[in-house]
Structure formats: structure tokens, C-alpha cells
Image (tube, rainbow, N blue to C red; front, top):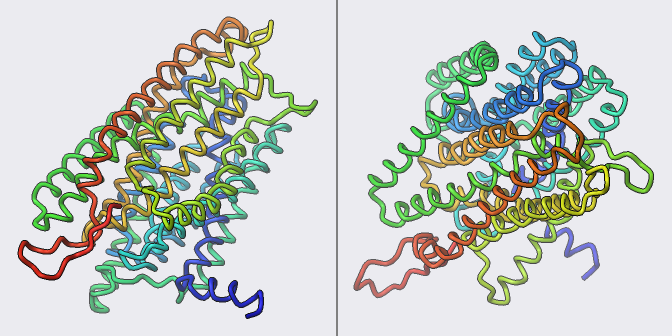
Length: 503
């Protein structure tokens, strides 16, 4: 057998469409990466927002981006096909970045309304298109999501790198124009592979042509009509925070009610496991989402960003995360495959608990760094670097695994809603991250030496909180393993045993 044959065999095993979704993910991420890493700095340095107002708008930005994923999970496959909704959302993102490039507060809100409507609705589409390529019991799903997550972070790497370059010269208009390029390429790729990306086994695929046209028109109206709604809510961030938190509580109660009433015992247990793991996910993402707000302000004002004589742009710090994800994602997929083949028990409960412990350790590294700050109060960059590495490894254990978990735990009729709910958790976490970040001191309050104690107290409390939740999940691992099952257990007395494996 030639050396090329094993490679061809592996490529032939990739489900149709999974490969192109990897590349679409790369380019679709660029615009979000630019805004995610630059919004707080753009708001404070160019538009002269206070640190508190900037972190508040960043929290709302995350809430809309992730919170609308829930709505996107409902629209996709019901009113618009996932590929239609994805392309429509990308068009809104292109228009949004173009508006923000105008450089005024008014255009910022218009641009954010366009961008967030697009990104909020279409991200779920990629995950749904990918998960549809696999059967529920296909063991390749986790690997595919790890690879796709690596593709997302390639896009983040390019976006963060470009953002840092433009940040050093504060050429924000050029930066936001650059952000439109990746979004446009993602649209082109989706159109070229349009037939390949067709939905599989969705409610929309089962309706006749007349109902399809009606649903298409309704979905398009919703897509466009959401823009002015988001624009209005962005200008009332505090009221919007309360609204999103109330909606999140209603969604949580609704999912708990669906789980309680669900007739299938196995699927019911899986749904309860999903809800328990969601609480752990909320804690993780609330700390993780501080990266573009509170942690970024700490890095700008209290960390010595000179490394080997080169000033590290704030957005480049985010690339610590992207490099760990891009390199670690495929490696972790391969490692898990080998360990499981040898009989190791590596499952979702264990991965989630480990991720929370790593996040806690990452935050606790920062107070240690502050304790060793120089005479000016500046913290060595190595401490921030180590913190991001720990957080990023934790992210690998919870984020792509969480996406893959939906296809395993969610009943077919709830898959879109539960995928969107999973992303809504990140939006809610973004609001909590904004609340935490609002506790950081304003740079004008004094030098790094006088503000370090506030950061140290905050980071210690948050890190300890994550550790506590992680340990609680460790204790619950046996219980969660009993809840999570792959196949229907055979009825009592059935001579044919049904294989049931932990998730």
C-alpha cells in the first residue's frame, strides 16, 4: 500500500460537507474576532467611553451575539434553511462592519445592530449543518467539532493579529473594513458549495413548496426586522441586561419542564444531565468572557507588555488562546481517541469538571503575578501568558465537546433549541463577565501599583469560585454517568441486551 492510500482513506471517511464547513468557519470568524478584541479599546480610546460603560456595552455585545443563537437555532431548519440563514446573517455582518468603520457613536450602534443580528442568528447554523452530517451514534462527531473549533480559532488568530496591527496605529476605520473581507469570502464559499450544504432531516425539509415559500418570507422578515429591535436595545444596555437575564431564566425553566414531561426515560435523563452541565458551563464562560473586557483593561494598564523588546498589542494577547486551540484541538482529538482505545474513561462530566478547575487555576495565577509585580506595580507578562494557556486548555475541554454533546443528549425535536440554549448560556455569561469587569478600577484612578489590590481580590474570588464548582462536578461524575446513555436500555426480561455506554 502506498503512503498516500491511508491519507486518501481518511479523507474518504469525512462526511460530505464537513470539510468545506471547516474553511467557512475560518473566514466567518474574522469579523467577530476583530470586534470581540477591539470593541472595548475602540470605545474607550476613540469614542471616549468610560471603562465601565465600555465593559457594559461589551457585555451586551456578547449577550446579543450568543443569546440570539437560541433564536437562530429555532429559525434555522424551520423558517429558513440553515444555509440560507447563514448567508443572510453574513450579509448583515458585512454591512455592520462597514457602518462601524464610519467612526461615530451613532454609526457604532447601527453597525452593532446589523452585525449582532447577523452573527447572533447564523452561528448556530454552522453547528447544525455540521452535526447533521453524522448519525447520533457516530464517534467521529467529537473529532469533527474539535477540528471545526480549530478552524474557528484560525480565523480568530488572523483577526486578532490584524486587529493588533491596526490598534498600534489606531487606524480603526481600516480595521473594520478589513473585517468585511473574511465575511465576504465565507459568503462566496457557501454559495459555491450550496448543494453540498443542504439541510438534512429538518422540519422545513418536510413541508410542501407553498409552505416553504411562506416560511421563507416570514424568516426573511424576522431577519431584517430584528435589526431595529437590536439597535434600540443596544442604546438601553442596563434594561437589556435585565431582559436577557429574565429570558434566560424563562428558557431554563422551560427546558426543565420539557425534561420533566418528556415521555422517553432515556432522553429525559440525558436532558437532565444537559441542564446540570449547563450550570457548570455558565460559570466557565462568565470568567472566560472577561478576556476582551476586564482582563484586557488589566493587560493594558497593569501588565508589562514588552516581550524581548517588542510591545505586545492588546489583541495579540488573545492569540495565546487561538494558538493553544488550533494546535491543541487536533492533538486532543487524537489523544482522546488513543486513550479511549486503551480503555480510559474520558467522558463529558470529567472533561467539564477539569475545564472549570483549569479556569480557576488560570485566574488564581494572576494574583500570584500581582504579588511579584515590579516597583511600578507592573506585572510580568509571563503570568498573564500562563493564565491564558490554562484557560485555553479548559476551553478545549468544554466548548467543542459541549457542541458535540448536543447531538448526543438532545432529542431530535429539541436539537436546534438546545443548541441555541447552549449558546444562550454564553450570552448570559457575557453579561456576568460585564458585571465582574465593571468592578475593575478606572485607569484614571491611579497607577498600576495603587489598583493592583482591586484586581488581586477580584481574580482570587473568581478563581476560587470556579474551583469550587469544578470540584462539585467531580463529586457528581458518578451520578451524571448514570444519567447519560447512548442507546435505549432493553426492557426487563428482554433476551437481547442493549449496549449502553457513558457519554
